[in-house]
Amino acid sequence: MDCDFLRRVGVGLAGVVMVGSVVVWSGERWAWGVGVAMVVVIEVVSFALLYFCSRGGQGE
Amino acid sequence: MIDFFVQSPPHSLGWAAYAFACLMALGANALCERFLVELGLSWGAISRQARWLRVVRWVGVVLGCVAVVWLAEPAVWLGRVVGVAMFSVSAGCDLESHHVPPDWFTVGGTVAMVGVWGVVGGWEGAAGALLAQALCYGVMTFGIATFGFAAGGDVKLMMQYGAVVGSVSGVGLAFVVEWVVRVVWLAGWVLRELAEGRVDDVLRGARELRAPHGPFAWLGVMGWIAIF
Image 1 (cartoon, chains in turn yellow, purple):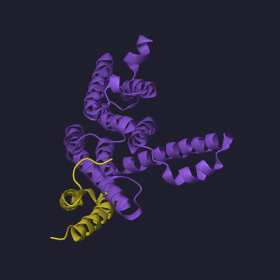
Image 2 (tube, chains in turn orange, purple):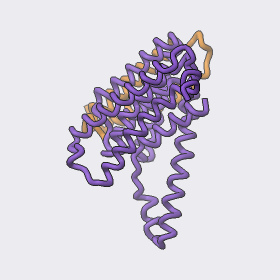
Image 3 (cartoon, one colour):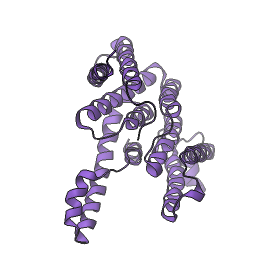
């Protein structure tokens, strides 16, 4: 797969995480379970894409 | 003097809580030393100025952890002391080396802090920490990709920051405090340069200015704890 494309996907998903976390936080408490799970899953996918398509581990 | 400590929150623990905070601070400083040695910054290898910076870091971490016990409510002091001690390691490394600790510590610390808030605050505590670190991850990643204002390591640093604060509203408030400190620091730097007649340096340096993110984030967390 083209890593440049995957990096863009990862950044886009990070944007979804950014907005999603605020939306879930401002929503009803009963809906937190599903919302938090979705946000965390998207975050993990985004993190994995960016981690493996970057120069690797430790940054400045 | 003794009454001051014993009667400060958490009321039920008194000296034990302060002793625990000191132990956590010493552990954080020792771990930070280990990471700095791995980066080639042992005591013997650094300049005299850097040694003073290291002393400031040791004292600052101990005072910060003790201040958390003094300032925090009994219900949350434990989570905050553990969090501040953990974040002190990352911020201390960033302060002295402009590098964050290895991934096992930054990412592992984020997961661990979600667990700590889960123990302290139940399901809502863990969910709040998860959302807070997710917000920090999203903002930093999107910000770096769009504006390039930080480096990749800062993403992991800020995930830990969100997990330590433990709530989305707390992250927002800590961020405001952090930026107030940043602006004051930047204004001081500009005034000093102007006073010494280095106008060109100011114009050039504003673009080239690279301050480590961790120490300001640490001050943001401490400011948030002091206010709330």
